Image (tube, rainbow, N blue to C red):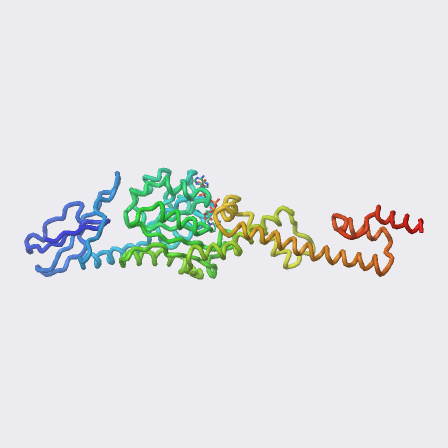
Length: 385
Ligand code: NAP
């Protein structure tokens, strides 16, 4: 009899005499494959007891045991057929949005959040856990972090990760990427796989489906064994099969691009929102685009926007560039206005009223335009002469 261990099961390989093969297997032994001939191996798998504290004493697959690799692939095949068991941690706006698709695709969703979303979860076909210990003891294949950027560290540290299987895949969908990458690498045990992702769409923009939207991902750490690769691919396939444009790039590269594509977009949307723009009877297409931008960006929480600023190294520089750009455009307009005033002053004799009106429209007197007092004193000089 050969015996070997993996994180999920104890495997026994027996060569039994025909008379003994009819013996009923104990309750915790599961027949994995039985090849009919007397001399063929009967493979048995000791399943873990469910419930209670399920810390994993048998963690590592011994190298060089061929059968284990085969059996893990079989197990992975079964897992793929029945879908992944995914723990969605952070069950707010975006967690619920993702869950609709995960459930439709046949995955099992276990949800956990600071607030109690039991009723919403049940409606969506997910199971809600108020206690993170209960969640982790269900041994999800994937833990998907969907909490706010600002709370990510506290939420991650509140998870009893020692109750998870030691080969669990951790993924996140935070809208910034270097920060969760460093956080996950620094916090999780080395045995855990890590994939950082950013689905670049939300409940507003992708209300009619995810097709064509970019899905950015970085396989930060995926263990070197076929089962882990298959699971990583099964996870990424959730987005690929919805028609997302799969974009593999490093977290640092993502953040450099996202400062422009995302932080800038949200900043402009939120700035325009301050103007309280309303639809008019003569909306242009451009104006409609602005109104939609306000809607799309302001429907996300301020926490999300704040996270884009606080946790992306490139955001401050971009905000400064935006301010500079606004000033430059304004300067060009006012320079033009000053030119007109100067021409009128030196080439014609503009009525005083038009100069003051132009200065008033500019918000302040033009730098080198004469102000009322100066004009008066010029006149005085003329009078003296
Ligand atoms: P959010 O405001 O960024 O996050 C809300 C979630 O964070 C809720 O689950 C909330 O839990 C949790 N949370 C907030 N503060 C918390 C705290 N102090 N302690 C524990 N949990 C806390 O809005 P969101 O739109 O749902 O986004 C979630 C994540 O998805 C973010 O990281 C965001 O960057 C990412 N994302 C969002 C979009 C989008 O379009 N919305 C797109 C791509 C990626 P409770 O609800 O239980 O309070």
